[in-house]
Every structure is written in C-alpha cells, then in structure tokens.
Length: 389
Image 1 (cartoon, one colour):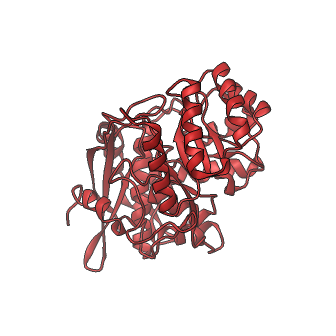
Image 2 (image 1 turned 120 degrees about the horizontal axis):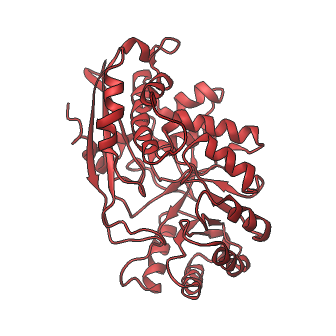
C-alpha cells in the first residue's frame, strides 16, 4: 500500500462579492488528488481535497516543499499497521518535517488541503464514509445522522440594494435554512444597521440572523457595533476584530450580552489555546469556527478539539467555517455543533451531496466511502480535471 502520485491544480473562484476586508475578484482554490496503488471496484483509490475560500490556492508551496517530502519518503513509514491503511498522522509529520513552529502563514492551508485528500483516501480504503471512520475511532462508533447548518451570504456586491439582500435571505429560508448570516463592517454603522433591519423583516427574529465583520473593526468600532447589535438578540456576532487581538475579544466578551463567534483565522492548537486563555470566550454561549482545511487538516483539528476539552468546552460549541463536505463529515463523526453552508457563492466548491436537501436547518450525509465528493456532481466534475482515471 502506497501513495504513487499527488496531483494539484489551481482553480479560480473569483467573483465580485466582498466582505468587510477583502474582495473575491482574484480568489483561487487548490485541488489535490492523492493517488494510491489500492484498488477498489477495479480502479485506484484516489483521495481528493481542496482549500476553503478566503485563502488563496497553495500550489507553489505544495510543489516546492510538501509534495517532494511526501513522495521521497519510504512508503512503509506512511502505513498505519493497526488499521491496515495509510497513516494520516505519519504523513502529517513528513509534510511538516523541517518546518519551524509558529508563523503559520499559508503553509497551514497547503498542509490542510493535502490532509483532506489523505483522509478521503483513508475512508475509501476502509470502504466507509469518513464520518463513520471518525466515529469508530474517536466517538465509540456513534455518528450524528444529521448536522445543523446555516446559510452564509449577505456579501457586499456592486449595486446590491436592501431589497435584493432580502430576496437572497428569503431564498435561503425557502431552501430549508433557519439561520442565515450576512456581512457587516464594510459600510458605515448606520448603513449596516439599515441592512440588518431589512433582513430582520424577512427572517422575523434576531435568533435567525448572524452577522460577520471578518476582523475589520478596531476596538472602539467593535464596541460601537456591539452596542448597536445588542437589542436585536442575534444568533451571533462574528469575528469583530483581528483574530489575534485577544484583548479586543475579551473586552467585547465582558460587554456584549449575546453570543460571539471566532476562530476561522486561527490555524493551530496553540492558537486555539491562546484564544481560550486570553479572549474570555464563554463556553456556555459562544461559538468556535476553526476550519480544518485552513488549519493543517484533521490531524491538527483533533489536537484543537483536545485543547477545547481540556479547557472545559463541549465540541458542540464548534461550528466550522468553510461550508465543505470535509467539515460536514467531521461535524457528524466527532459530534460538533454544526457547519457553515454556502448555497450560492464559491461554486462549484460549495454545497453538499446532490439530492440531499436542508430540512428545518439540518442536512444529512450520503452513505458512500470517503468524504462524499463524488455525490456532488458539479464539484466532482472539477475534481476529475485534477485526476482522470
């Protein structure tokens, strides 16, 4: 059993949308295919992975550093004898060989993308859905049969007025979502107040709406937004300031009465530990949004979950960023609190299995080996461009 090739291709997911910090006009995404010599149903097992939106494709890093390390390693070192399978932990160690600690930069995205493909291959070799593999190994065999999801949208877009924003949010409700999310912080506080109130006219109550400032606000502005938002009773107030500004987060935690969410731009278990040490996040009401595809993959994600457990946090307070099937499998297999969803943006690198609809805010998972990319026809069409048997 061995990895015989790893292929990578960069795709554009550019569009005219913007959040408070960046526009997505030049956004790219890396897709990788990990090819093994294991044969299932007469074909080689191939694991696929891609990185989440908001961070650019990492093909250069993979080709220059990580892929040579992997392909030059003795295949026997990459085998998990206990499970008669590839060993994602040994592969992770090889990828991170000669990498200094700290300063995660973009390498966490490159490793996270490769790690996703490795776990897809592992589950296919085991001939189980990834969520069941994870449940078997880490949760006594019990996986969730459905996962809570919310619809992420409400981006700033040239010429987009409040009525169009309302139509977008209504479309999410019509598709079965019960919580929607919109962007704030990219306009004046008065304009954002108007936008929020227009959405509330559609969704009906604050607990059906979350807002996301994408780290744009300084302390004074974040506090002003908190004062403006508090009366609405929103589902959460997400990432108001720089993700590493724990003092800002701590001040908001002491003053904002509602739930807060952050973590999508923290990339290691050390970052997670510092967030919980210094940001005064509240385990009974706040949410953590670490994304395995951006944070060195599932191997590191398991370490993050261990940190949360040590600090008294339930895994049910974790709702990953990214809106992809990898996080959906992790949520079901490791008993997380839910998963983000992108119904209309970042196509085809969004969405879940074809034919599985959102019902009262929950989505099911397909019973196919691996992560399930093959059940998302538009996504898998793109993936097949990376590896065509």
